[in-house]
Image 1 (cartoon, protein in one colour):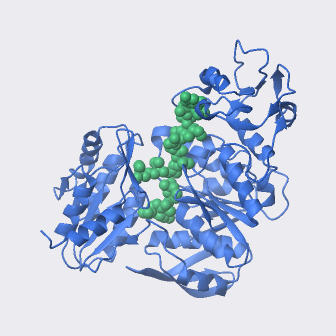
Image 2 (tube, rainbow, N blue to C red):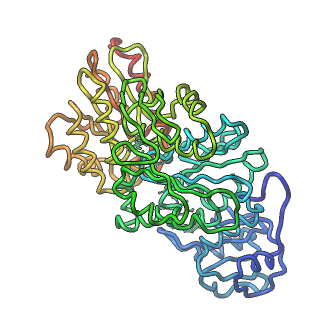
Image 3 (cartoon, helix red, strand yellow):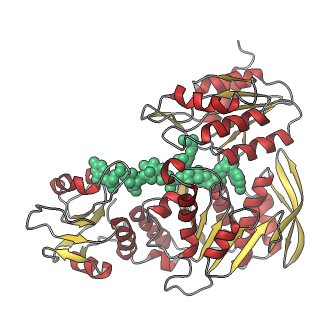
Length: 502
Ligand SMILES: CC(=O)N[C@H]1[C@@H](OP(=O)(O)OP(=O)(O)OC[C@H]2O[C@@H](n3ccc(=O)[nH]c3=O)[C@H](O)[C@@H]2O)O[C@H](CO)[C@@H](O)[C@@H]1O[C@H](C)C(=O)N[C@@H](C)C(=O)N[C@H](CCC(=O)O)C(=O)O
Ligand SMILES: Nc1ncnc2c1ncn2[C@@H]1O[C@H](COP(=O)(O)OP(=O)(O)OP(=O)(O)O)[C@@H](O)[C@H]1O
Ligand SMILES: N[C@H](CCC[C@H](N)C(=O)O)C(=O)O
Ligand SMILES: [Mg+2]
């Protein structure tokens, strides 16, 4: 954290107070040289923002922040016994205030970029990558914010969250502006929407992919999860930007009417089953890609993409809808899609010349797993062998559901660990077994993920498919709070090489 890399920057606290229209206790004529919401990372001259969290309350860390040299405090409850030299700004919601302040600090980068926000349970990463690739065909740079990485021009900036905290987000958007990007396409998670991480961003386009069960550990109810996602749409019309604003909605999703109702801007729909502005017909799926007829107001054209599965047709339709509305012509869209690169860890084939297929995929929700396994089964002549686990410290309700889905589609399943984090791996596995054991006895437990992958590869015969689900692009396994290097693709490759050696 800190200032923009492009200039040494500071603000007088009074300017921040004025912008936020907030109350202040103490003398606001102090220089603020940075902003931080984590006492452990505060630098001298920072404004320390007290955020109320799920684990602790940032107001309690003011003494640590002051020890590190914080020059002022932004709080939502007055902090008692502050030294006279430390002013405090009081707002109703510090997360929202931080988001607005971040945008102000970086001179409103979201006003200088066309902002495209993509939300939904599954498909955000895939859709945003497709949108970036498509829009760059028009010329110029498109920035990207998301799960795998953030891209500022062609520079890759590691991502810690799918949607970063507002301070880091404004910094990224600022860098995109300085690199000359004209558009930013970003994944907007439900956590980010609920926590107001994007409250300082004015979006031009909001896109909804789908909504199925996830994150109930955090949202506690389906309504809260849905309402968080809806925020991207209900705030879309508000702001000072010129230019066309619109919403794009998957018309086949049962939740579509909520998103259509929430948007107070023109809405465009896409889909396969229901009537929609942009549609796909005659879908043909093969292990290395999909073809279909794209129907839009410009007529029908055949499309060929390297992404496999009906679920990916939805992602392609979503991206195509945005590309069309951003002014691209159908032939240019079609030409790009035939050569669009695969998204890392999404239906990624590991091919070391073995006589069976190995697919690494990021499916970590019941719907994601069902989609990937249904697709894999459709293109497999032999047996489908699935390796998967469920994340620790995450929605427990997903575990038996994913167990049952794996049991339903797979000839054999190996239940293993996927980032147990602080939980007991065997407790997570037991919860998965609660679902799979009701469907089939064709499974085994191998907690060690490498052993599970090895076993699946050893079992596979010609024309079988091994699906290794849940981690996709991830290069780590978090066990007992510690992060170890682990990459499903790397391990699968190593285990394939060992075949026949023992
Ligand atoms: C559940 C969740 O979303 N947590 C996020 C939230 O943390 P929190 O509110 O629980 O924070 P907390 O630990 O209670 O601490 C409260 C405050 O005290 C501060 N603090 C804490 C300790 C200390 O010593 N000093 C100090 O100042 C913290 O910095 C924080 O400001 O706010 C933090 C600051 O923005 C985030 O880093 C943190 O993300 C955690 C690490 C996380 O794992 N989040 C995941 C679940 C997440 O956000 N995922 C979504 C994508 C999900 C998906 O779509 O699949 C994402 O957008 O990445
Ligand atoms: N449109 C879709 N509908 C259902 N499942 C999908 C869809 N697109 C992708 N998936 C499945 O979900 C997995 C994750 O896809 P992707 O990374 O694009 O989603 P995401 O929304 O970005 O996920 P996250 O919330 O973790 O960021 C894929 O590996 C695939 O198994
Ligand atoms: N964004 C998702 C990713 C889950 C990926 C899976 N590998 C896990 O760790 O649970 C989450 O944080 O819930
Ligand atoms: Mg993602």
